[in-house]
Length: 138
Image 1 (spheres, helix red, strand yellow):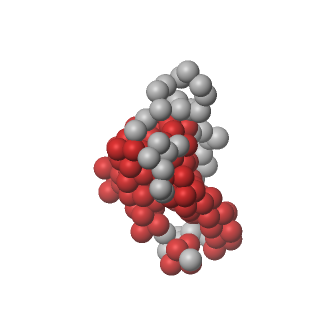
Image 2 (cartoon, rainbow, N blue to C red; image 1 turned 30 degrees about the vertical axis):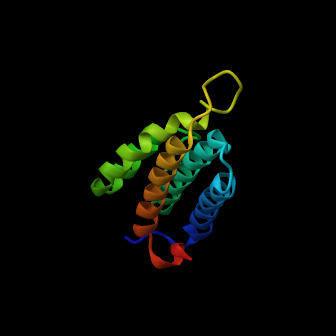
Image 3 (cartoon, rainbow, N blue to C red; image 1 turned 90 degrees about the vertical axis):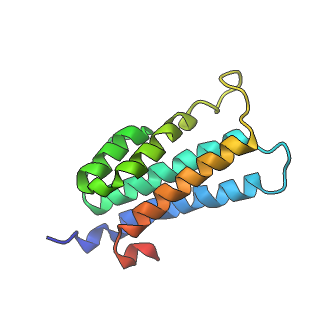
């Protein structure tokens, strides 16, 4: 049975939030030698999380209120086993939901770390988008 089209608004809302996280990171990373790399990495984690939640919402799979990309990745792989490598790539981003948010918790990452996180988040986002039907890709 194909997924119910009534899920479109929820799925589109998750994807819109994910896209905002990806756009926000571009603004933060552009043109600054120092950068706000911790914020960039936080938004990379958020984009991957929201893209996975969009995929799960489309398939009507309930998920907890969580930032754990390992947990969300397992749920995505249960629906589509070809997502295993994407879930593995996403898992390390989990810690950026909290690790760099408060002073003294970790040193400010460098641009290379931030770029790696962004690359992983973009791959997760693209993988989820590629597995949703055309109306979700608008």
